Image (tube, rainbow, N blue to C red; front, top):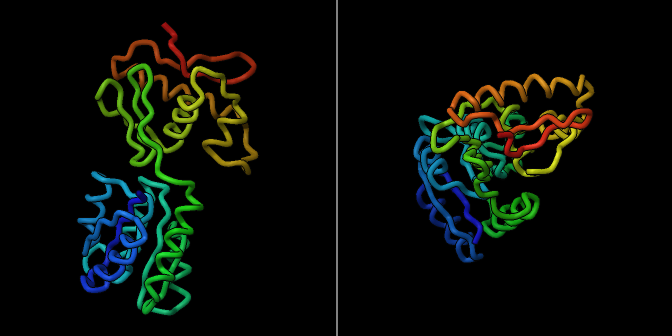
Length: 225
């Protein structure tokens, strides 16, 4: 059952939209303000986020921006304004789709289902190995239960290694995972970031960081004791 987080300060609209989504077999969590929605997502992540733009306090734009810092889940924005500027802004800060009010509820359901198909299903669960735990949804890391502070690049490199453990991941593949396929800089930038990841892992008391260097190839997440 797909989980949809719906945020709209109009309770009647939110109730109607959630009814149609639930009738299509989805689980819907409704919030009427951005702050509560952000807190709710952190405790119960959703696979698709539907955000109204015009809300008091934390509006949809700022909520979208903050959510994009912690999740890659598809975001659909709702707005009563038809201007192109809002649409461009929403897409520019990470939204995947944009619907102008008033809209047909069946159209919204179809758009949500399309976003789910594009996203490839439910979010990944936590990845755990050798005392290290990474949560792809919240992008939080810990070692033996203790928080691990990683930059975005460090998180992407470490999760890339853990997903392929204990196999070797080449520098070029790590570059693609962290910087994308169109990065044309020096692949050895990976080395300095891996060094910092090792230092941070060791500082938690883990002992030797479980990242092995495979000369001439790349790195592997494995027991190095």
